[in-house]
Image 1: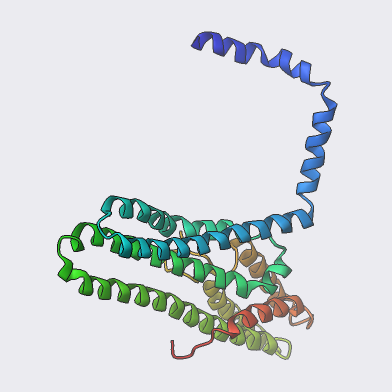
Image 2 (image 1 turned 45 degrees about the vertical axis):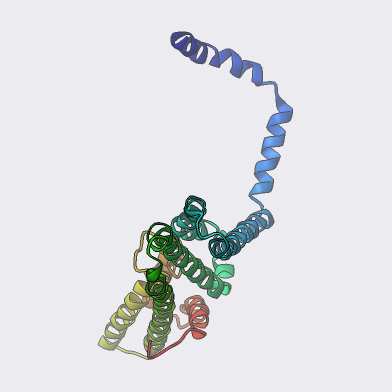
Amino acid sequence: MFVGGLVLVFGGRRPWSGFTDGWHTPKRILRRVDETWNEPQWKRRWGYLKLTVWGVAVFAVVRHGWGLLADIEREPDQVVAHVASAQVLMCAWVLLPVWGQAAEPDLPAAELLDRLSSRVWRAMLGRTVANAAGIYFAAVVIHAYVVTTRPSLIVPVAVTLGGAIIAVGHKGWMRLRKLSTQLHSNIVTLERDLDLIPGSEGDKVRERQDAARRSWDAVHLDLQTPVDTGYAVIGTPFLPAEMIDDLCRRVERAVELLPSDETATAGVLADLDKIREACRGRIDSVA
C-alpha cells in the first residue's frame, strides 16, 4: 500500500494537473477571493474581528474564574472537577498574551500611531489577566490538595496568593508608567537636539548631529522594550520591529539633511509627537 501510494502520487500528478488546467471557474473564484482579501477594508475588518475574539476571550477567562470560585464555595469536596476546570486558567496564563500579540490588527503606520495608546493598553490588560489566571490556577491546586485536608491553612494561603495577584498586577502597571515616562522624556530631548542642528555652523553641526543620534539611541531602546513584561520573547514592544526600523532610517536621514533642509524632520517629528501623546496619560515621574 505504501509503494502503491507513492506511485499514485508521483505518477498521477501530471495527468491530474493537465485535467485541472481547464477549470477556469475555480481559478477565477480563488483569484477574486485573493484580491478581496488584500483590500484595505477587508484587512481592517479582519483586524477588528481578531480584536473582538481577543476581548471575548479575556472576558471568558474572568467569567470562568468567577464561576469556579462560586463552584468551590458551593461544592468544596469536588476536588477533581475543580482542578480540571482550573486547567483553563493555566492555558489562559500561557496563551492569552500570545493571542493578544497575534490579534493586533495589521494597520498602516500612520493609523497604528494614532491608536498606539490602545495597543499598549490591550497588551497590559492581557498580561494582567494572564498573570492573575496563573496565580488563580495555583490557588485552586493548593486548595484541592492541601487546604481540603488542612482547613486551618485557608486564611494564610488566601492572603498570600491574593497579595501575589495584587503585587504582580501593580508591578506590571508600574513598569508601564515608568517606561512611558522615560520614553516621553527621551523624545522631548531628541526633539530639542534636532531643533538645534539647523542653526549650527562649522564643527557645531557634527557635534549636534551626534547629540541627536545619541538621543535617538535612547528612544530606540525604549521603543524596543516590551511594555508588559521584561522578557522580550513573550512581551509586546511599543512599536512593531519593522516600524522601529523604518523610523530609525528616517531619523538618520533627517539628521544628515538638517543643516541644509530645515523641513527634513517634519514627518519624523509628527510621528514622535504621536508616540509622546500615547505616553502622556501614563506619565509618573516617581514610578
